[in-house]
Amino acid sequence: MQYERNGLLLQEPLSDQVDQNLVTSFVALHEGKTATYKLLEPDAEAKEKIAEEFHAGMNPDLTASQLDQEALDHQLAELKNWKKILLESDADPEVLQAYRWRINEDIAGVHMLRASARGDMRSFKRWNEFIYGKPDKKIYHGALDWFRHDAQEILANPDSSDELSAAAIAVTELIDATADREADKSAITPDAKNFEAVRQNHVKAGGYYALLLSGVEIPEIGPITPDQGVPILARVVSRNLESDYQTQAVSGTVWSVSHDRKTVNHPETFRMPVKRFVGLGLGHEIGSHLLEMTNGKRGPLGLASIGLDRYESGNEGRAVIREQVVYENFDEFSKLVRWRDILRRHVAISYASGVGEDAPHEASEVYTFMNAIDRMYHLKALKPGAEPHEAYEKADSKTTALLTRVLKGTDGKGGAYLKDKVYLEGNIACWNQSPSAIYNGDLGKFDITNPRHITLLQKLGLLPNNE
Image (tube, rainbow, N blue to C red; front, top):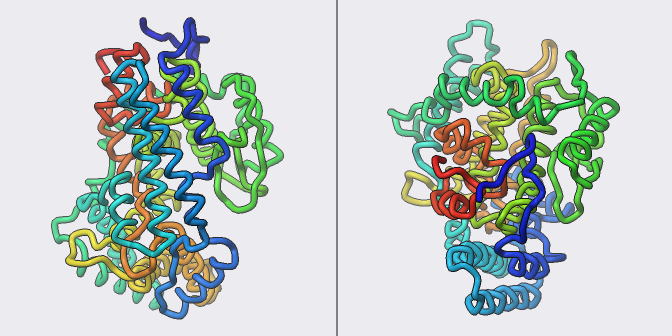
C-alpha cells in the first residue's frame, strides 16, 4: 500500500498503524520527561558565572552538576525495562529493530546526563559520540576556509580600518595554524545546479511554498513584525496544516516548535526581512518540524511522528534548506548572519574536540579562537562613527552565548556537546539528495540520508521504492 498526500498532508489513515501499541507505550514512557539538551542547560545564575569566567580567561565548569543522580538512575532503569518488554513483542522484526535503535539512543542520552552530572568526561564523550558521531574534519576545515576567505577580503579592501585589518590578520593566523592548506570552502556549499533544482521544486506554482502559504498574504516589503507575522503563523498552522498547535511568544530570539506544549514558539519581538520570516518561521519550524510530526501521526509508523533514531541530522539539515531556497541562490543566503552562525557552531565544536589535532582544546582556548572570529565580523558591521569597543562588547557576548550552548555538559577542559554540528553536516548531506527526497522528508521525523530509515519506510509504503 502506498500512502498518498493531499497537498502537504497525508490523507487520513485508512487503517491502524503497525506500531499502534508500541508507540502509545513509548509516548507514555517519555511523558513529562525533559529533553537531554534542555537538562544540560545551565540556569540563569550559572550562566552569569560562566560568562564572568570566560571573560576572565578561565575554564568554566559547564557540567550538569545540578541534576539529581537518583532521578537519572530511575529514568535509566525505566528505559532498560521498557527495552526488555520491547524484545518480547510479536511486532514486525524490522519495526522492533527501529524501536530498539531509538530506545538505545534514549538510554545513551541518560548515560550522558549521568556522566556530566558526576564530571566523568570520558563517559560523557563516549555517549555523546554514540549519538551524534565525531565532527567531520573536511566540513570543519571547509568552514574555517570560509572565515579565512572573509578575512582575506577584508585585508584586500583599502577602506578597512586599522582595527578591522588587525582582527582579520589575527583570524587568518589562527586558521592557518589549524586548517589544512588544501581546505576548501566549496566543501560546505551546494552545487549551483542542484540548488536551483531544489529551489524550483519549492517555489514553483503548486510546489512546497505555494501549498504551505495557500490563502495567506505575505507582505512584499518588510520588515515583518509580530502584528503582521503572528496571524500568518497561526493561519498556516490551523488551516493549512490542520493542526491544533497554538502560537506562543517567548523571551529571547529562538524560534522553535514544542511538541510537549503543542506550541509554535516565536520571539516576543522581532523585525525580520520577508524572506527570513518565510524561511525560518514558516519553512523551517512550521513547514518542516510541525509538518513532519503531523504526517508521522497519519502514516503507517507512529514512531515517525516522534522521531526514528538519530533523525536530527537529516531533520535539521533539511529544515535549513527550507530557509536557503527562499533566496535566489546560495550566495545570497550565505551573506546572512544565520549561515555564519551555523558555521560557528560547527567550528567551535570541532575546535573544542581537537579535530585533526593531538588533543582537544580547553574552554578558554575555544573562547580565544571563536572570539577572534566574532570580533572581526562585529568590527566589519560597525556603523560609521561608532567606537571599536562597541563591536568588542557585542562580540564578547556573542562568543559567550555560543560556547555556553556548545560546551554545555563538559568540564571546560576539552570536548563539546556535539548536537549542534548536525545543522551544517546534515545540511550538506541533504543537499546531496534528490529534490523529491527532500520533499518526501515531510512525511515523518526521519533522516532522508539514513539508508536504514529509507528501507523501513519504503517497506511500509510511506516512501516510494525509487527514493
